[in-house]
Image 1 (cartoon, rainbow, N blue to C red):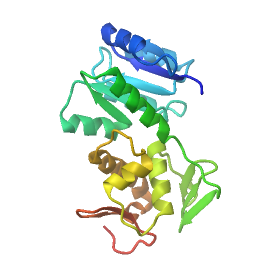
Image 2 (image 1 turned 90 degrees about the horizontal axis):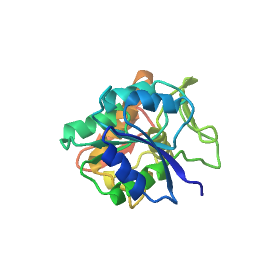
Image 3 (image 1 turned 135 degrees about the vertical axis):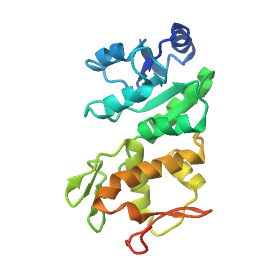
Image 4 (image 1 turned 30 degrees about the vertical axis):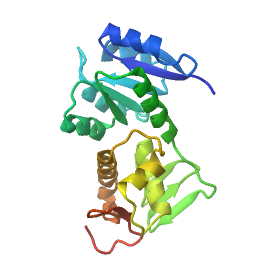
Length: 234
């Protein structure tokens, strides 16, 4: 298996050096940038497997950088782990809502970061022997990893795609947040239940313009269910 290329965007040289020397060299190859301007220069000729992004940067915040690259086709699907000294839950949720795949709060250990990188990269895009899964006008093509409603393609992140794929294969059954974490991220994932709520909310937002957000129902004190029928609007 080839080494994963990581783009580290961090203005503190000590942290960049620590990651360069501490992360396993047989797994990861690091490219670093001290600000978002240099990072954009790097992205113009090299697309990494994952970005490690500091929240506070001298020229642009990590949140604004995420918004920028999520608008570009060539960079919109790169997984992102945020590094932040902001431990408050609202800030973590903001990072996830803006498109980060995970976050690590400073100070952190290289072993924790490496574990989170492996977890994020395991998510990937999944495929199925049968290409199309269809529920009314909602069609997921696992061969092309595409989702469309009324022939309009939806722009989903890899984790949103995987979550919808799981829901469409397992309709009309309640799944707890722990069960969804195990199915989507894996049993050894460092994911809390709040992350599931954020990802479901993001997926609903993508489905809402087409009237399919009501299919994902929240079951109080239980979890979520994806309804094959659109009765009982929520």
